[in-house]
Image (cartoon, rainbow, N blue to C red; front, side, top):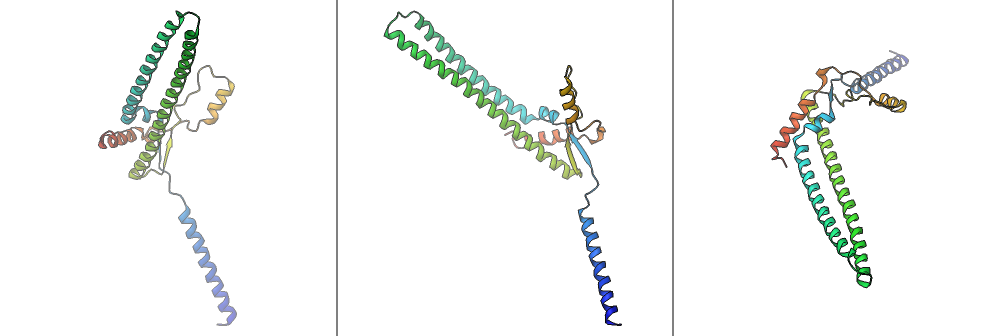
Length: 202
């Protein structure tokens, strides 16, 4: 076998090896056949026992704040009544300054309390979303789902919507019809409620 023929054979073999490697790489990058599941996020949130328990805590915090503000308003009203009967003079002026300070403090307490409740609500919603995300991944691993999507099938065009609102709703909508067999919402709710109960409802 001549040197030229040997070189040609080696070149062919190298080309074949390179082609096999490329094909092998292509095969490893091919995604699996999709097994799609959908979740109704709003239904999940409304059915979670953890959300119900924490919402009760939030409501109780709100009632505490409401009572505190009611007491402060009553105290302010009492001082205002005593101010109204004071004659003109230094005592009335001092009382007026105290009332102005009290009104400012009361306004601050209202705004601060509302921001506190809003932050607690925001943190609660974020925490529940992250838990739904993790539970969806757990359910997907257990059942072989390759895609778990949040369903927007139930989103409807609001009654009386103008052209822009209709156009925006249509543009944002992704799912027109989903076969019921893809819906794992109830499975996800059961999984998360069981986990919540198993951890002592903390």
